[in-house]
Image 1 (tube, rainbow, N blue to C red):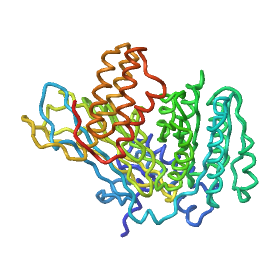
Image 2 (cartoon, rainbow, N blue to C red; image 1 turned 90 degrees about the horizontal axis):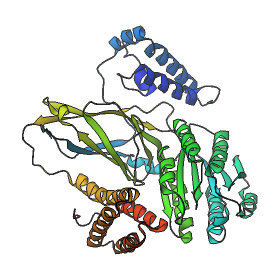
Image 3 (cartoon, rainbow, N blue to C red; image 1 turned 45 degrees about the horizontal axis):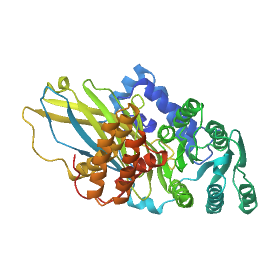
Image 4 (tube, helix red, strand yellow; image 1 turned 180 degrees about the horizontal axis):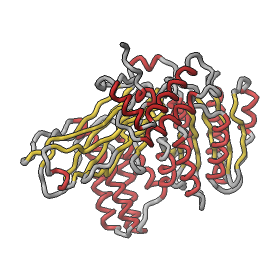
Length: 494
């Protein structure tokens, strides 16, 4: 007798999924596979299978009867490779909090570099406010033209320019005769103030015109200034975009833009934020971002966690491909995409409270990794991350794995500048100065003299004016992020 079809795998959920998780997985699969939207051979049958899976699993009585027929759960066959590295193999029975670190790495198979990436549906949203005039706008327009020329036949791109109002320069469509559209880009003229929501909303409308789960749907937002009063609207819109699989990446030019806001906006969708300190770098960085989108293996990685009493995930940081802190939003964090030629790695900091280490073992993480791949008609099987450690009375003295040590060495440098900025916000300028001086000393020891010189200049400014310059603070922040992409050097001094 043939084994029953695995309805859980068909919906992309674990066997202990809640009714809410099953319902959400069904809605996502149905939207992708509905015959009204998809005419590909075989997908109607898959859609009918998804319907049957939901009808069975959404009914508790039917689900119980179905579960009895299932064989023992086998390890899911995943289209990617994964590793989990823990900082220590055991925890200690202590009367004070203790830390556990782990790295999650997801990597495409070697053959992924030879396969076609999903077609693009990209909207380039350009700040054309008055401050963009001159070299900045000239470089942006030249790069937008280059992006248009680099499109594959199956790709869709739209271009939006905004100041205090937005204008669609190139609507979302297949552009077979691209050369005639270049004049529209060259005609963009700077004027007005910066209102990012105007541009973001217009970009979203263009993305929605060609929204397709089989495409990589992404907005690239480029700005050089602050937006005023519409940040909450932008962040609320980004949260909605994340649920629809639409990413946002922000590129900030110079020192006047709000990096905290643009970081938050990008992180909510699993996107990235980057600094363009010199207008000469606009072309390189913008094309690097566009080319990375065109080399996507999996569009999104999301980790959903279940709460564990006495355990807190206190910090998450993406190590690559785009180093950045990742916010925990409720029980979920978005780790971004997996590229064809590199792995996606994130480090997690867990705080273990004394009440959690009373027994002989502790499950300190219980979650599910969900990977979205437009190339697959059915959902990718989830990866269960249920991690446990034995608890001992005496600490085990084995050192952490080298990869953990290297990641923490860089992370400590990045968090020094985070703490310095926090101390400045609280008015603790002496404490901020000490953090920055320690950071500079460690950078000099590692040969990063240019960044250390920037910090030394900002320390002098902090002592005199009790503030960092806008440009300097961004160079320090994004400079310490860039260290994650460099080869490891000497150990740092605390």
